Amino acid sequence: MSSILRSIAATCFAFLLVLSLGVSSAQANTVEVKLGTDGGMLAFEPSTVNISAGDTVKFVNNKLAPHNAVFDGHEELSHADLAFAPGESWEKTFSTAGTYDFYCEPHRGAGMVGKVVVN
Image (tube, rainbow, N blue to C red; front, side, top):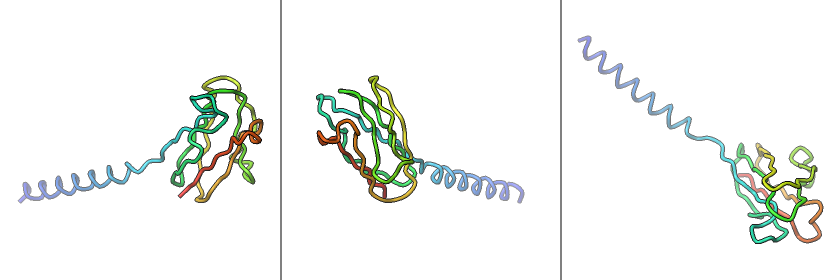
């Protein structure tokens, strides 16, 4: 009788372990956006990113500095400081669904604009 109880307990434990691993695997992602394309264009690469609420966007200075990312109407997401060094980066986490337009302040007139779509 006790061996049957141990088997049932072990089965329940294994089931709960598998269930908890499945739940914990839903983690936030980080998506990278380059400031300046590899080809030397004044653009964000990619210019539009689609993410889920809770995900993070990592902005990485790439070419033709200086760059920044200013979000219209969202000071809390903006990074007004200019990045000059290649590889310089910062991250912003998006917790609320919506569409967030941004631009590079020095190169907005050249069309350096982007968009983060949060589902």
